[in-house]
Image 1 (cartoon, one colour):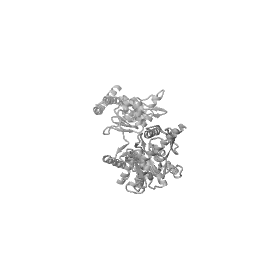
Image 2: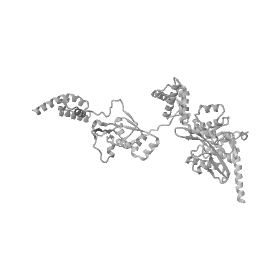
Image 3: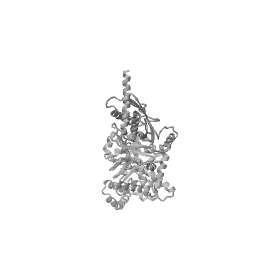
Length: 558
């Protein structure tokens, strides 16, 4: 009788459930696995019909645990339109491939399928996953897990602890999920080339490289895009609107960051920083809009906050502890310009270059190189200088002089070739025994033919020398010599532009070493000459070299 009653209940239950389940089975008929699950669900409900009949009379905890078996753990919700785009900020192992969580019950670790958590790869399946390459490589086992999933074309959820334990605990083993995801790694060129050269699997998986330029050209189309970007930042950050003059000022700042008046930087974070600070200044002043003055003040405040070391160095110049001449004429001395870069702040530094020349065998000694305070590029520049001097004055015989070159009061390492022009001019001045203008500082690279080449940081260098000239007073005789090829890089501060317009400061451009002497020689020497001032210097050098040669021959005879 009990069996017959059981059969009748099962028949009634089957009849009832069939009507409910048929719609679901038809809806998901495209998936054999879902159909199989629904059929198994139907059989399980029929088999446990007693629990449903006595539902209200059973223990509450038992009922809750029983009902859990019919829950659905929705790991990924694909209700969005289009392909998903997931940006994973912390690409750790379990953040990428998911994990099985555990619950502590009476001192025991318990888990079930409802505690299976998805990873970024699940969420981005069928779409795009964006990862920071540096963070991915820094994560423990994250990079290897990502490669394994991409190579196998499926995601296997496995707790990292189980891979490390000698005796792993019993764990659920979710079925591998097929994956079709485009993974985008964002990082520096250095990271890309390290992975490309040392990881063959990286080459196989990441075949498309897209380089982002650090600057973009200043044209109408790009400026419209730039203004739209500023507008987007204003709306996204809830900032005040910016006036036309404010837009011009922030674009000038972007050009200074790019070190060119023809290009703007793509370092958007630095622009956002200035806009946010300018917005606060506008709020404090109760301005309706962010204007030019707010932008300028934000830039000025940022520089002040970061300029402690610069201020200390300027103080040393002010106290004459760093010796520099910005007026008068001297032989074998010149002010060279360099850049000190601390990452978040850079400033121009003035270095006095001195040269002594005397009778010898053509050895040009750089003191900084001899004591190991110079880098490879700087050492190369000295050899280039030697080649230029050799071609110029040793065509009919050996050089008959020695020279020592020194960056005075330089106590750290120096590198780069932007001081080559200054060293060459100072050397020629010493050889010719002709004085040169100490108010004119020089920056520029030189090749073996005496042609002046472009250098970096030209705006910073000009600003650095201008600040020092202000300490001792601008009298119109000061200025800088820069390569002609650096003209397009000039994006100067308003203060310097005003000083140039008023004749208190000068910026000269040259194409060759010879051009410098049209600017640097005293007026008494240049009087009556137009562009052949170097002929005078060359003549004086040849006379002195012949004098050295005669003295050496005289000594040999003696």
